[in-house]
Length: 522
Image (spheres, rainbow, N blue to C red):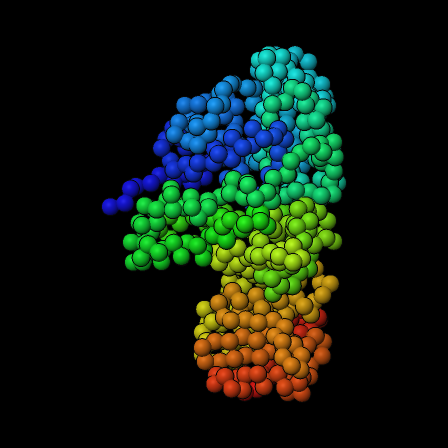
């Protein structure tokens, strides 16, 4: 019988994990490296990847709580375990829809520290108050201050569609973070974490000594669970998982890898990192679900998707430079790729040794399936609430070669197309992407812009017994689409395949915001 492990799902307190006997993946070697080799750090990682737990662990280190670290890697080093004052700012769990949201949070934290360190007079300027608190903490204790800032970007991400409020928050935060340089001689250590690293917001304009370790090879596994850590800490849990599903241990590891592994946070030596929340949730429940997506898609990402254009079929094969993913902008006019990378929806799949360019794609099956499903909800919010479109029936129609039936269902689905949810700059491409999305979500082999000697086919879908060749037109006619398939010999590459071939011409109408007519020929 395997050892019964206690999984710390949703627990972000290092002391609670250690005192209550939950599994703790030892990240203290990284903390030793941080405190020994530098002073100011920034780390970007996706949500629910362990950033809060990392800061909680550092907090207890600077509290001098050596008892919590017994048996961990950091205790083999000669640390003094001195107690320092710790200012830990957590920007999660606050409503930033109104201007007072950020001020109320900061006032609450600052008032607590002002009381603790005996500051009688409160300056109305929040930035000045924070500087006064740092100085008072130093004077009261005789020790420099450790400053930990969790999810520094939360207020900015929550206001992507309110530029005026975002600018107000930006100015407030700039005043807060500016103290990290002004009060340097009183600071022992400072670390900021967040989902994104902004390149154009000038939040850190005065803090040019901040060491961004987000892409550093030596810190690639500082959050999340590496393959080695999975086998070291969770092997008995994987054994239980394998037994539950009637699989061998190796098969269980492979299933978990396909579902939750594949994150790479450095271009050098691509170290595999698992999504920790999904992984331990799967082991705890002995089930395979999209746990990360079940906790919700960030509102800021939905807003950005709705206002940006990107070809869906290209998301699993994007070439960029390291600079392209190092910082993001919240402008709707800029590329979504850096945001998708830093948010965890894309990862580094490979690096070209000659050019240094990074190839990005979905890290694993959970992310690809969950992201496409989230897009489906945006485009078709009513798709599963009584429309003529049924996912199950659509799948069966495609699988069994009932082209007329699934095209009718597709036509009914477009009647519920949420055209307000997306930018309509390139509507023809959106139509093509949405059809791609539907077939891809259902697990069919789906190819967009399929290359042939005579040109590119808009869409090819393959099942065990059928091949569907689609050509799309916009504000023209379905006949023109079918004629193009014939004129350019698009079916020639499939003639020797043996599967039955359908050619389908589809005309989309801007007026209808959907399928006006279609022609199916065998």
